[in-house]
Amino acid sequence: MYSDMISKIDKAKRYAQEPERIAIQQFSAIFRGGNNHEVQLLASGEWHCDCEFFAHWNTCSHVMALQRILEPMLNDDARRAGSPFTFDEIAEAVG
Image (cartoon, rainbow, N blue to C red; front, side, top):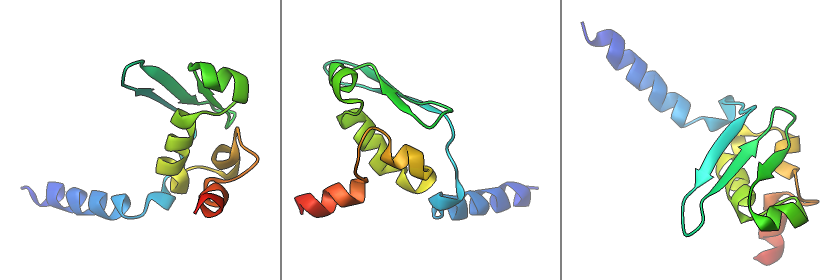
């Protein structure tokens, strides 16, 4: 009776261990804090954030955090959007 659910739970665990199998095409999230900010990954592969920094630089800490968290699930354009460098290149430069 519950064997179907158990097999789905096992499958979900395997999927969670292989995030590169997931391809995020559109996404929206709210960063909560002193000021809440909405970040979106648009269908075009471009990011948008409603914070002031993003308006001037076309990237921000909110976008960069999501790029880092979602990296294995993003296409190359979404990984690089808003920055001439990938997160790995920045991390290597910073140390």
